[in-house]
Length: 262
Image 1 (tube, rainbow, N blue to C red):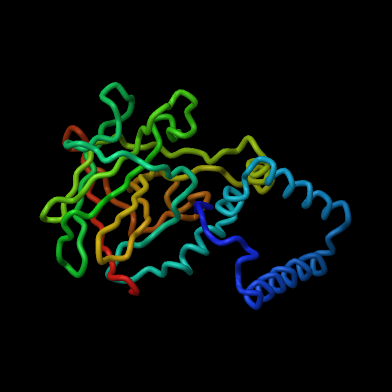
Image 2: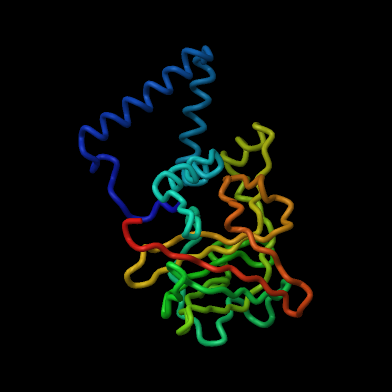
């Protein structure tokens, strides 16, 4: 999930705002009453939420509680004929259009080399000139926005499909990584006995004129954290194998877009 730009809560229709606030309040009151929450416990909750806000971790909190994935799934129901969508995450930034051959990492970057390719289609027909926006972490599990020395975009870029709807990009196999755990949300995960790992993945945005835009991720078979993603975003329909019988390793991720309104 990405906060991005959008309406303020108070911009909602009054009836919808009342509906949501009353439902949330009723749910919280039920928790307080059913579980006999004490003043000390409620004060601890309020202090925790205040600290989450101070540390700008509300999106992270939404993610690890798997609410971001739920809202995304309700907003973009998966269809049998289209690629499943997924949350955007907090690390998207504008990326440059890549020259051919499209490459997300420099030659001196560490990591196992990977050629990631696929085809963008709709209804079985290729979509030429579709724009793909890809971003991922480096070999240490960090995105460029987490690196103080990264003055220009790294591990991200945009490319376009050819006349047959095909694309190919050179990159590295991303590792699993932990979401930030040095703040209040990390302490919450520890207190709940939960890990902070996300399976290895590459983010995608796919756009083409006349089709609904898609935000998704690709995961890689064999990852130890598949099925136990801390934010619950991994889906079987987004998991592909890596062929290491060739050098560099190869993986194929095909994308099927939908017409608007589907």
